[in-house]
Image 1 (tube, rainbow, N blue to C red):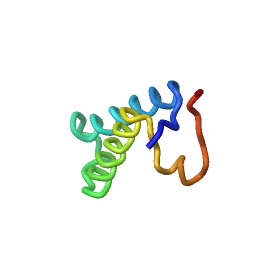
Image 2 (tube, rainbow, N blue to C red; image 1 turned 60 degrees about the vertical axis):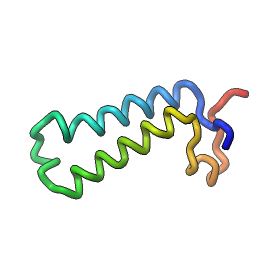
Image 3 (cartoon, rainbow, N blue to C red; image 1 turned 180 degrees about the vertical axis):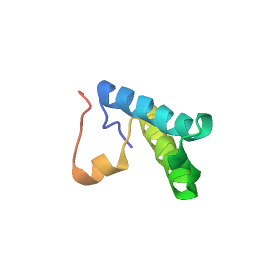
Image 4 (tube, rainbow, N blue to C red; image 1 turned 135 degrees about the vertical axis):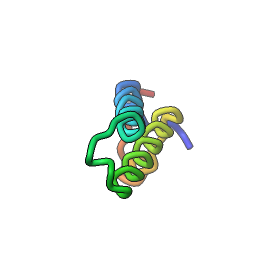
Length: 70
């Protein structure tokens, strides 16, 4: 499992992941009253955060994308 995400890609993923985790938990936006949207946002946020921390994206591997400068 080698890194296939560049620095900017990882930063963007981390920021979006944190936003998607915090929005349903910290706000009372009507959109997140729906359990599908609530849990969907949390799951996608966690996945983005995990891929940002590890530097590896399985979807990138399947598509042959590599944003890492090595």
